[in-house]
Length: 185
Image (cartoon, rainbow, N blue to C red; front, side):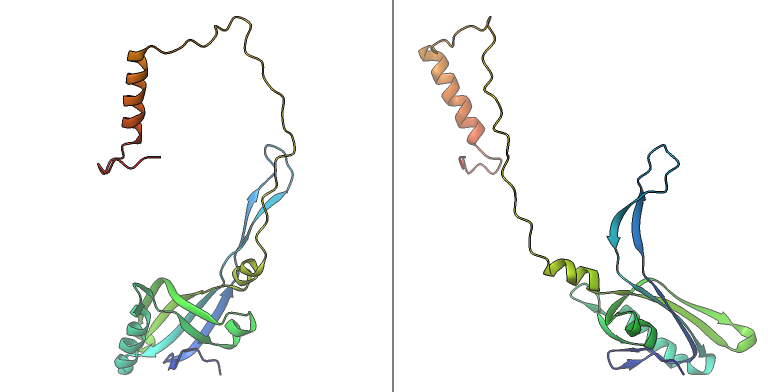
């Protein structure tokens, strides 16, 4: 018998079917050729998709499950500790509701078919990436060559008194920020 618990709340109903999705993002790297090359964009968070039946007579159970799905924590969806054989076997320990929460009437069975998804919170690849040391910036190896001024360039001229005043005013206006505080560089 399969079950799903979110923190201390056991998902009500019967006939639970849970499936795990582990998306690998990649991009075609073949250009205009017939190559099958792919460029990896990383491993994304796992997703647990669940379907369960809740009897019409157990309306309170559907109401309670809906409240759990709607719960917020700090403006975002609440993060739950996930206890389920499929999720835990794949390494998913925490998740939050994502996508659509659906309750479809199944008249012939006198119940709702409830389906929802939980997205992994802080995935295993994300934790591994966080443990990796930051890559140090490397200094530029090529110092380059000095560029001589063009032969037809005129020598720099001394600014007149008036041009110096205009330049000082222009520099002061450039330092003046939009708040009017006049904060400089």
